[in-house]
Image (tube, rainbow, N blue to C red; front, side, top):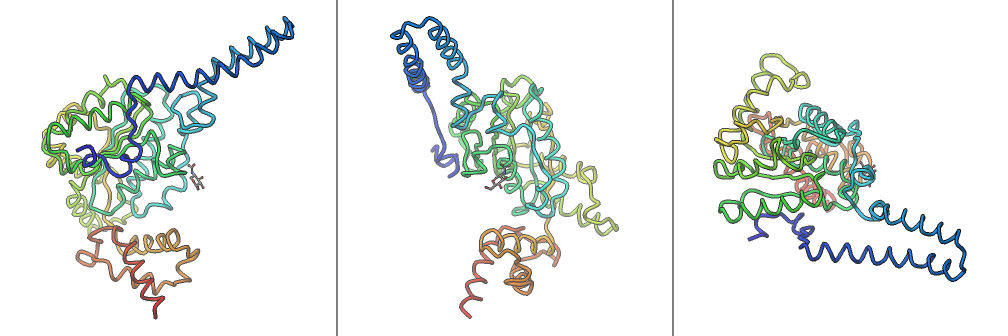
Length: 361
Ligand SMILES: *[C@@H]1O[C@H](CO)[C@@H](O)[C@H](O)[C@H]1NC(C)=O
């Protein structure tokens, strides 16, 4: 049951320390520190030098008080005073637009809110964001980019003790839901600077997310955490509104959050876990983030990016060349010749297939 509600990523990192284990961990660290402390104490006692005794007691006491910091030097940890090593509290976003295509609104609103949330040592409540848009347009990708920028370990290894992803699709029994909540509670208890990502919330039964309310509102004991919900709901409404704005003569880059705010906010709550939800009536969701549909231009960018990252072509427009990029783009399905039906989702398999075919010729 647990495996169906927790994705591959967190299956690998699920760590459920019992109280007993936690104490054991503590004891073993204490034990090592004690042994280290004992060495100078005994050598100085044997040498009967009262000044060195005082010195080693001072050093020893110091080491005892800084043992958390010492552990944090080598192991991913959550302590605030050292968090900048493992958990960034000031982020640089300048390179973000180069890694995600066609989402200028999402990138700008999300990076702003996350930036201020991380900087704040005492945020009033957890940051709760809800990403909406068609499949493949970058919702998962942006949450992944955020995780990489905030958590060093995630950037380096693809997993972190403080990044947890869940897929809501299988949560249709009360027991699975309470397991999810218990799991989230444990993660937050271990570190409140955690990032919790819940995918496919539009597939959840109505009101199912309400169980999270105590973790999300102003009374939450874990106010430093960040929650991100992902869902396809409101996707077609956003697309229609974008078409409408483009037809009325607005350039895509000039579309602003305000232009889409009502469309995303009103339609996101019409289906799935957010329908009739107390999360809405209590206003715990800080922002509904619209993701725009992707046009041919963005798919070309995705293709080039894929060639660069996955296939190590430093300049894909020269080699394998723009003709090849066009060919991949032409193999992608577009609705009304305008927006990609699956966003960038099928780009990587199309690139692989067409590259293999090209190499065979
Ligand atoms: C993430 O890792 C890459 C390469 O491993 C590095 O260039 C980049 O600076 C890292 N980013 C952060 C935010 O640590």
